[in-house]
Length: 71
Image (cartoon, rainbow, N blue to C red):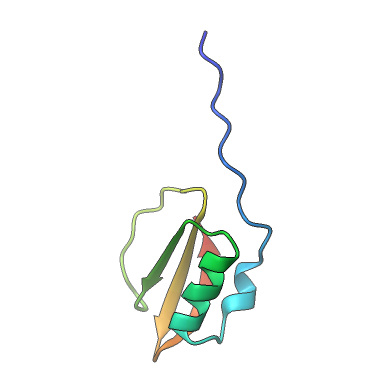
């Protein structure tokens, strides 16, 4: 039987800490902190709900992060 794969560790970082930052600054900071994928989305964007380790999502309104979440 094949072993169950172990997902890579995510950065020990709180998504809430990005709220209010300018989008470019938030993306740069997230990558420096170890997030492998950073996705910026306009409010109301329809997205799939699959969870991806190492991905940080930003909802960006008027150039600033309004909401941030893992996956």
